Length: 483
Image (cartoon, rainbow, N blue to C red):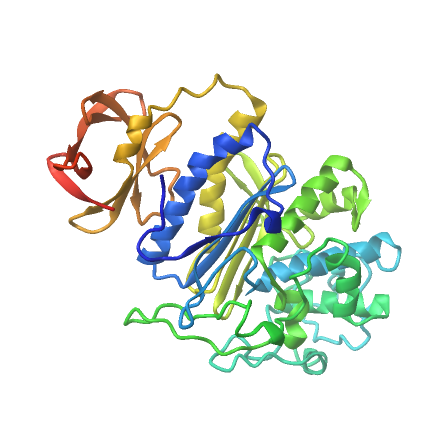
């Protein structure tokens, strides 16, 4: 029923490669909403001029959907896919935090010991000498009072001069704290970089070697590494692009590595690997065993450990923690030159959504939230079997589905969902809130269904001589169907 739109190439990842698995209840229930999601994302890439994007959906430990949209490399026309590599930047902090908590559980460090106990060279200037010590507890919750960055202009292009480890170590003694420890929230890449240094110092191994052996390999994250790999530049690694300039164009960003800031922002991964990472978290909670971490340690990491006075910012150990519409979400976002990413998990619903893009001004969290809002009620209904069986779909409704272009710009897409016809206007960042139900009232004639269930204006579909729908009329104005 759906098809590739606007010349934007979409690539469905082979199910065997993604580990996609669905229960009998999930499969038919998800198909229509995934159809809607794919059409919506296709359209968004065109309207927002996004180079490429990869998305994945996890439910109950299974990767149920994984797909690439647009291009990993626009100039070479290389399509994005579920196994396309992207910089995930600050999502790196989740892996560093996991390593810290592993070593804590092994009795090799304390979250409340002064950081200088593990890093004697960490002699940062202290503006509040009578205050609490800088500790891993403060670092993992971004409440240690540290500056946001190491003292280098690595977010400044076009060079993006990320320092090597030795440079970070040398420069930190010339910096000073911003706040008294444990008094204020201040997001800090410097802090998580220092946490990575603690992992190396306590384990006696280079940071990258420790996380590879103790976190990434045990979890089967074969396409995830603590640094952007040179060997995949020009291949599986998506090419990064700048935000849109005033003339609407984007500039390609030259290959770079994050080097000494890697524990905070250096990782590269795929949506399939981060989906596997999410699946592990659901599995650990269900089995309540020890696999990389003890289950209670993961619970501790995802529990609010720092809350701002106005309740607007909640942090676990490494994880961001937020509330929306009565639900708690954990995860993290990432933003590096030319890349944006987001990992969103609802532990109660056992749903995770992953988004990665190579367009710097794109908001991946808008996509993870939107996809969650679309799939969560469908999965709740299908798997809990709380509702009656969906009404049988009238197959004749298929003739109305498709894309309709509006004269004043934008598009309306018509779908079959839950046994009836719905419309969605694009572009939009809220597809769940933008759906309009139609009820058939006559031959090729429908009425809009209001939120209270009453029927509103007519929506009429006109047919051409060949019996195919040619346009949709609403409020006396029409949109042309594009095949």
